[in-house]
Image (cartoon, rainbow, N blue to C red; front, side):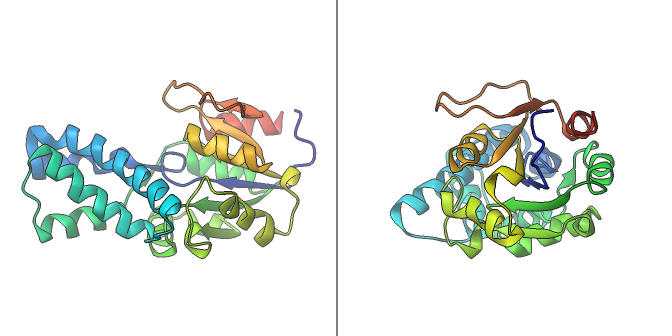
Length: 225
C-alpha cells in the first residue's frame, strides 16, 4: 500500500458518509412526480451556489445555501414551496442516513488512524446528522468550511485539516465520493482516495486520486492489507 506516512483519515460528509438520497421519499410525498427534477436541480444549485458565493466573496453558510438551492429548484419545477415544506426538508437534512458501509469501516479504521470530517456544511448541520447516526463519537474532529468562510475546493478549507490535526498534507488521507472535491484536495497536496460509489469518472483537471475504492469498507480492507 503506497500510503505509509498516513496518520489520519479525513472524510467528506455528503455523498461520502451521508446518503443524500435519504431525502427522496419526503420529496415524493411533498411534490409527487416533480420530486426527481427538484432533487437533481437542488443538489446542482447547492453546489453551484457554494462556488459562486466563494468566487463573489459573498459567503453564506451551507444551511442558507441549501435553502436557497431548494427555493430555486422548486421554481424551476413550478412546484409550490411553503414555509412548512422548507422546514420539513431542512430538518430532514439533519437526519440523512449514513451508507451501510460507514459504521463497520469506521470501527476498523479508528483502531489505526485518527479520524475526522471536513465538509462544506456548517457545524450545526454536521453535528446533527453525525450524531443522529451515532458516528460523531468515532471522529476526533468535525471540521467545517464555515470556519474559513469559504467553500471547498478553496485551498484554505483543506488547510483546516492540516492545521487542526497538526499534520503535514502527506500524513492525511482525504476521502470523498465527489470528483470535484477529489481534485481540490489533491491539488492542495493531500493524499486522496476517491470513493467511487456510483460508477463515475474522474474530472479532467489533471489531479488523479492516490486510491480508488468502491466504498469505505473497501478502503478499510485496502489499508489493512
